[in-house]
Each structure stands twice: as structure tokens, then as C-alpha cells.
Length: 172
Image (tube, rainbow, N blue to C red; front, side):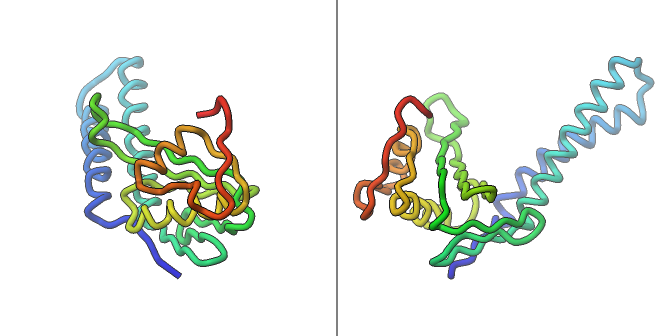
């Protein structure tokens, strides 16, 4: 069994972004007399950044445990999925620059009603992606061309796994 979590250093930026949006919006709401439209706009911004901060805290408090039989997320965002029941996998890349040099990846796993979503900041992300790709190949799960390309970018070649992976046509 392997244990994975989001390190403090990876989450600090999200906490700072949440605070940088929430604190000024609330300060303006409390200190400046605003009309109804401006009040709604700043209240909406405060709520948006508050939700982002709460989502960051929930993700930070979640721990992942990968075993031979499945993946379990414990904490506020708990879920358990069995590798044998994996029916959907999607690996996406989000670029922060036009030249696509910087960015992050997100892995979405689904097994029936259970789903787990994690991003590349989690410790051992590559290992989790490889284990998920192996389970998808063993179960004959279809993947998109984009997911296959992102697996290749991580050095994971789905065709080398026993069952192979079936590419879904026309889906990204």
C-alpha cells in the first residue's frame, strides 16, 4: 500500500490566492458604501474566493491510499474505488502558458458511482497515474486520444500493459 497527500508547499499558493481575493472583497464591502449592483458584485467575488479557499482546505485534508485492490481517499472528500470496477479514466493537462511548458495535470477516475479526482501536485502522482492506467488496460476501459497522449507525456505507454487500452474515437 502507498500513501499520498498534497504537500503543504504545493497548497500554499492556493491559500494565498483565496486570501488575496477574499480579504479585499470583504474589506470593500465593510468599509466602502456601495450601491446594490456593486454590493452584489463584491459579495459574489467574496463568496467565490471563499469557496475556492474551502475547496483547497478540503483537498489538502484528503489522503490517498493506493493498494493492489483499489484507491481510497480518506478525509473530508472520502471515496473508495476498486481497480477491477474502474470504468472511466481521464488524464487532462492544463497549461498556464501559450507554449505549454508550464501547467498541471488532473486525473479523474470513476468506478460506478465512486469517483476520485486528483491533480499533479499530490505526492506520487506519476505512480497513481501508472497504476490507474494499468487497471484501465486490464479492464478494457476506453480512453480518449488526449488521455493517451498525456499518458505518453508521462512516459506511460498503455500498449505495454497486458490488456492494452482501447482508444475512444471522437472523444477528448
